[in-house]
Image (cartoon, rainbow, N blue to C red; front, side, top):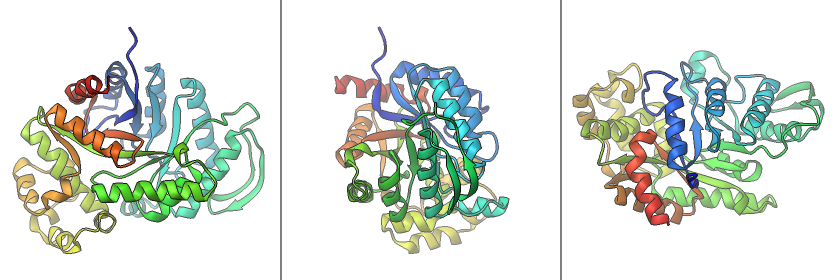
Length: 347
């Protein structure tokens, strides 16, 4: 009997620090067997290049949707990205979602990549819709770039969904205006999540779109008690600490948390001693110390506890207005007891 797909659930491939990008193959097969609806691919500038992973994902799956969440629109020429999207659309029989995001400004500066502006992403989305619909665009000169001609051909992919990984209110509103799906950030409080959903839906309505047509995903840390204590510590404290390293001001401002806590976190000698991501380099002892710097409420927005308690939390995200929940930071193998409990209660 075919597995029933839970379209409202997703996961990120290659969560944490996988040994090899080839781990994606077994993960996707397990995810399809579990009935997870969408596999999200996040891009990093080493062994997680999105186009390569997308092609592999499309080749080894038959049902699950494959979404980039996210790649950056300015690291490939527009036509290269358009060709990538169309190729994936055809390879997967329409299961591909092209997702973009702003990226991490600190890394972009290090590598000499231009900082991405909201207007650029909006212009990119409008252009991509035209080109995927089979239009020929001539003489475009806008925030996303100047192009003499853009054309995929008449047999393109007008129905291919566009996704935005969004954070601040301007990006969220732009997602409601121009995109089909919006992915929120991890560790958003309930109040922040509900506020962000409203921002997206209201912007969609103001743009003359059906708010229900824009799918908002909660990116929800999923850390069940069946995992080891060390793994739970890394997936909660380690991940939060890394976010605070990369864009702490934005996360604190968005959640309306106390910025003084972030200042003390940054001033700590242990935190300052890391030349890379804390979730990649920290020992358990270091994480236990860092945990004393981060209020419990900052990591509380997560699915924790028994499988049933995790399901309660997941359903709570849907009750806040989210249309889907990404079970973030966990592999399909780690999600088995939670998905089993979710399916039983969903029936």
